[in-house]
Image 1 (cartoon, rainbow, N blue to C red):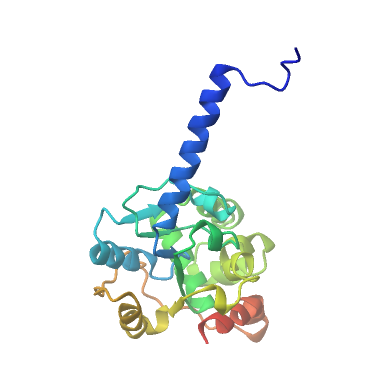
Image 2 (image 1 turned 30 degrees about the horizontal axis):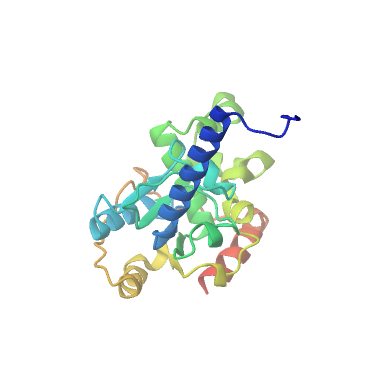
Length: 242
């Protein structure tokens, strides 16, 4: 008798366990009501705290590097506690999120592209704990004597490598229209939009300002040529917040 296509007892058990785990993962994802995409330096830490307060720790799950952000960014399912109602973190939007979270309303916050890039630079220099971004800045600019922040910012606009973290809307949001999201807020009108989201969520969302940059200097004035670096960022930003 040909046993090539037959599973052993151990293989049958492993397959059954894997299928049971898959069903549990999908069932827990179906319980999620809110999927929050945290774009760096768009009040995400403040909003995370607001969500935790509104929904409680048991219903909130943070999705970052070691808890499934990479998998979600690829449109793959992740493990979630059965009590999860809202997820929030640094994962990219993906078209398969509609199927992964059939009851999840997708939300995000955006910020003026130049202000966001300037804030990201200052935050990275302040904390020096974003290994990839800080190491890139250190190697290409700081170690070459460019330490004045305004000069550094403008010099970085001439380096193609900065696009991976300065042009995040183009990288992650270019293929999505406003219909993909249930809510898109602007940090420039954070309190006003937070009130609007309160009504949609039917949950009180406290206003807080956390993880702000230590450097309060406003973004530098840029020439038309320098602003052109962000032209695609502004196109996507205005499309989604309008």
